Length: 611
Image 1 (cartoon, rainbow, N blue to C red):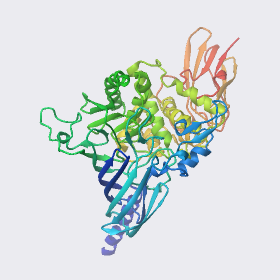
Image 2: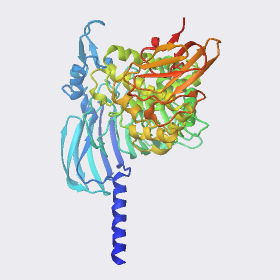
Image 3: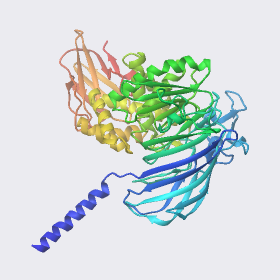
């Protein structure tokens, strides 16, 4: 009996271990930073205390930090990429040629020593003891004194200094709108370690993947500057600048600088912007979130930046209803950067002379508060998820709030995708964001084709199931790092339809969809799959007496069907190029996918009209 009980305990232990090996985990960080900023020479010095918790099952003998500002130096990997790619980002180059015969020169290559960006680590300790490290471009490689065991937390104490680069991409000083400081990716940032290992790639141009945690940041900066960004200001009465409780007295200390103390819970980044001429408006929403708007005190911006405020609240309400509640108490829309970019609890938006010039960007970046800041996919590896999902949901928000595009708000994306296919430069969306051959393929693929992943999923599993899938995805993966498979499995569980084939075909290949009506004879209709990618098929048949019927042909690989009022036909196996079915009356017209949701690259063969 004793041996039997021991055996039971051993089996139980093995079972628990096996479960733990497949259980989701993620690393955790707690940052405390104290930073002094010199706005006259664009330099700053800081201390960073980082408590790093290894929740992985692995023992770590090294850690890596990102030093993003080092990318803005002549000869950097970012500089090399700008010079070598055939269609460089126009914000990052000067064209010495013509529109049709361009001769591009990298702006980074021409930076002077007082214009470059840099992040230098002066000292680094692990649990109070100096640790060995080296800098390789935008990555700091740290060889640990003692490995970090599974479940162990260690403390890294760092002294660092930085120089804010001339604005070229995302972050920097004195952008085109005259905003003094756009401080994104400005601090030594611990790289992510997950089930795939370390993500410590060089900063080339694309986006980010950060460790979930908490930030406690104090910025000492010239008192004329208004600061906005990630986190909640802890000492508003010592600061003013529109943050204070106007029913209480200010307690601003004497001196040239103010000390702004921010705390940001459960985020994976910290960003801020500052300018001596910011207007700061606060909008208290019905949902309880405070919306902060910081923009240049300039008449040419005032009208649009006022108009955008109630519309931002409407977009917030829409996203709350169709995805899930925004969990933080504050979100800031800040003029800065070089276009639009999402960050924790805020976004940097450039421009704003007209409402039309910024409203689409504001909606898109606010959508990223869910699709990447809350559902924190790896933007570098799966750019189509955050960009595509944000594009999809912000397009629907724009249609609802601004009454755009009628009942087909995503139709413009299809045109962009068809142009990409015809250009013959498309690449699979499994391509790392930095490694697309062209910026055009990255942009159209990630934003446009990525958004169409959801639009076509509507076609495959039905609109209600798609809506339920988005909400379930939020519930299951908020404050985590979901992968494409995670979303696929959510949609499968909601719909009862298998979708591995769809993720594979649409994301992992460049196969295209093309179905045609091969022939109509008497009451028999034969369809043919011309393209490589299989799909379920909706067919509308109009009869000679002007009545009509809808037919639904599931794809066999789906092992299920969407809910529909159409007549259900037998499954179509992908390996069979032809499919024939019969109707009950004389046929006048046959149309494949009357909804237009399927991305068929040749719709000219989707309609057959009898003579």
